Length: 242
Image (cartoon, rainbow, N blue to C red; front, side, top):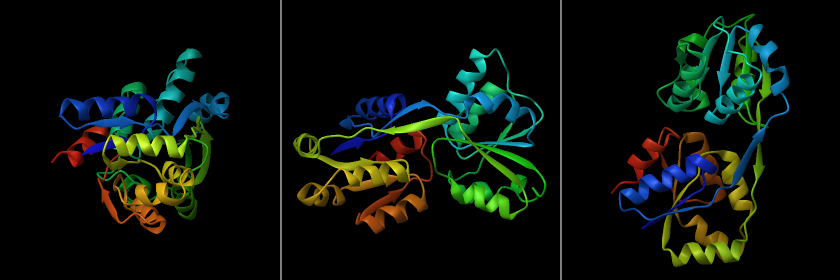
């Protein structure tokens, strides 16, 4: 058994290190890079004039915190803070020094089921995200009468790879399990593969954090998909242990 980890940068490297420490061979092939987003300059004023702040990922928190720190600014205490997952919530709570609400299962559907988001008519909600994604959250909160704004605080940059060379290396390493933590990364990964390389990839055991991504994977042709319920490395490691 060997695991192909596609998480970006630090998260991916840390996951590989944790797996190797448990005796599970792991290879790292990041599919995206993370850069500062176009909406960061508007972030300080947006935070001061909203009722809710919703962070969709750790990257959203990290890039926002880096910008605020560089401007010698702090997160305001007045908004209610929410996050899609536990790790994102813990990081956000650490930097904003406020309680952060999050669902037990890290996906849009369970976030929207939180009591804190049931009665939001007339409330101003800022969604901190990358370039695209989480449209269900936006659409649902708008339908509930909230005034919702996206803030692109980071952007994902796709990292192409040479399919024939990479697949040969993965096969030689006896990769049989694949970890992908977002629909965007899943679609991009599949787009890089054709023919026998794609067929091989579709035969792998695939770990994803949510039912939504699992359904996307099944539509693409993956037949052995496992939903972990979280994108946190600790939960991915638990799912990968024999």
